[in-house]
Image: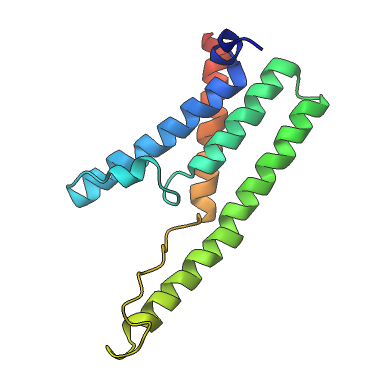
Length: 150
């Protein structure tokens, strides 16, 4: 496989663009709300819209446009997209909520407790259903725009 084939791979390009747009939205939204630049928003997980959802739906939709929506490749991409989106709203969302509780428990420990100086756990891990829906919609729109423009 030549390097030029990767640079012209429509599904891969759509997935990358959808990811970049989702992360950029989070970056600029964070700046608007907090009046400061937070570079972590460009690569971090969690928040609106879900970059995981936008990436996998852009990939699946682009594969559908390119290979056909009735093919096994699209079916595979769609199943994987559903698993990623389920994980984002299920396992990772609940892990983030557990991290909130654990951080609060550690915060309330007496200063002499060995865990009192523990580094806080990351709390923003997963997504709410609206964040996943928005990311999915962004992915579909990105691939459709790429298909009809290119």
